[in-house]
Length: 179
Image (cartoon, rainbow, N blue to C red; front, side):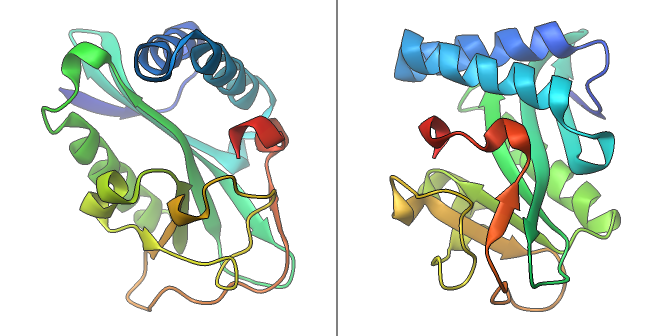
């Protein structure tokens, strides 16, 4: 497995990976929703506000993690949010997702990003340092349907701070169906 950064020229492969992965695990409606989200994230998000990490095997994209900027109106911290992430169904439970996320988080840290947030399974994301956070610690841009899945971590040596003010996500994530 090789981990690469960027998505130009891989938009279709990434969209298909997310569609297949989420259709397999959550059903066709969720697969279509996440495929549309990924398509919009890749097409609409300014370059400075998106980081895409791909796991590849023999030239095929078999895993991906998409991070986008999350802005807190009264806070100077640089925050990026992981959403979504996928590993091809046939390649799951082999440590690939953990390796991909560890690589991505280290790259974000090296780029000066201070906080990583995600919205997902605490047991899974806890393996790479995410811990449950409250909306008092970091407000979500939209109402959370599963507040126990709001997770964060500091990418510096400091503890996870309380982020000040309301938050704004990139436009593609500004849809209630994914929250």
